[in-house]
Amino acid sequence: MTKTIFPKDFLWGGATAANQLEGGYLEGGRGPSIDDALPGGKQRMAVVSSPDFDWTIDPDKYVYPNHSGIDFYHHYQEDIAMFAEMGFKVYRFSISWSRIFPQGDETEPNEAGLVFYDQVIDECLRHNIQPLITLHHYEMPLYLAKHYGGWKNKQLIEFFQRFTATVINRYGDRVKLFLTFNEINSAAHLPVLSQGLVHKTGADDPKNMFQAWHNQFVASAQAVKIAHEFDPAIKVGNMIIYSTSYAYNSDPVNQIANLEYNQDFNFYCADVQVRGEYPAYTDRYMASKGVKRSDLDITDEELALIKKYHVDFISFSYYMSTTTEVTGVSHETAEGNLLGGTKNPYLESSEWGWQIDPAGLRIALNELYGRYRVPLFIVENGLGAKDQVEADGRIFDDYRINYLKSHIQAIANALEDGVPVMGYTPWGCIDLVSASTGEMSKRYGFIYVDQDDQGHGTLARSKKKSFNWYQRVIATNGAQL
Ligand code: BG6
Image (cartoon, rainbow, N blue to C red; front, side, top):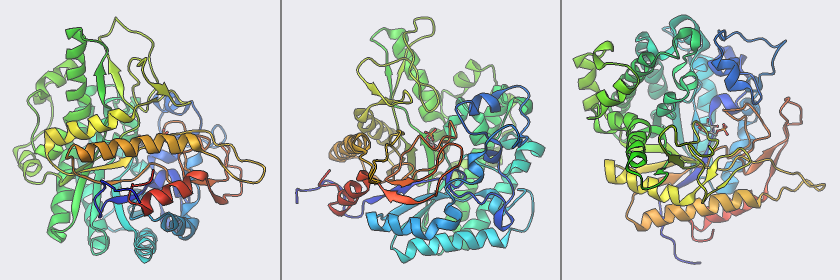
């Protein structure tokens, strides 16, 4: 076997989120979450961004793929056994807040919901897979978005604290890795999923976005406090989208635009969650959106809490890079999970227009470690693609293997640069519902799930070619890609 640069305790695994795979959306006493109001299909984000969207679930008008997901709720044993067969050391999944607190503002949790995650965790441990739990992955109880206006409302801090304490007290004996808010910085472009804000509740007013972020920073600090007090061995990370950004050219105006893109998008939330204080450019960033810090409700006690209970490590998603240029000089634009930026002529794109850039991952790892000096965990990466099932049932997803291989190579390069990387959990290790388009046909998995965009199919699981490839990567600790 060739020599490996990956540390022997490197956490290879995969990542999913409750709302995109569990299904069973009202089973076991669960309440609906905001994702249950998102229709399937490419129009999904346009529908929820429209002025009259009010979280109504209308099955006569739309298909709601999150309601059934891939029915992990009833298939979790089979799925975790397949993860174990690939050799996973870690499995990242999220806890659906509305399974534990169906409405969100109750004082007592729903025992049936807690039992479900007991079973998932125990099943992982039985297979020697370490759970990595995201506390808030693009969902909250629908009731909190409808009746409290989402994260702009400070009452959510208390509700989330109760949820977090319940989760950590229940599972903290068995789970030692937690993440607070998935892609917390995504609100800069998409406040609906991470902050529960829509047009009718003020999504278009940037003041609400900054207030919601502040409330989440406080809630994140409280989660760190609760976890460390329960067991100092528990490590809590934040979670951001990182999109390595290049200036379009050496024109200083584009270099400055790129500097500001990095500060405002890539670093703003991490600066607060990792360094424990608002960064120097906060007022410049807020002013660019017409907001003053004094407009926000921020107390000294909250700032002290944020300072004291910063996160232990940084986790991030990396799918693509961005190219920045000032408005008005615009060339062709790219698509992206949020904002594609200008199209980079040196990069190929996925079928959904996301620009593929493994070198950008090495840059991301170096930039993040250089700035923060804490361990890093890549908790999402992958290629959304349409898979072709052959007549004999096999799936030759070499495009996915090539994508992942080049990104793992980039991690190896960053390890050679001296960056401490804790682990790697490719996104959607089993096919699931896409977050941005609600499609099943946009697949990321090593495991194929027989279900189409309308929810038809047997739900049978099968191994793609990448399944055996990833199994070998893990078995050789990254020596054989
Ligand atoms: C990340 C999210 O932005 O990207 C996931 O954390 C999401 O929830 C993933 O599924 C891929 O995006 P999409 O839209 O292809 O599902």
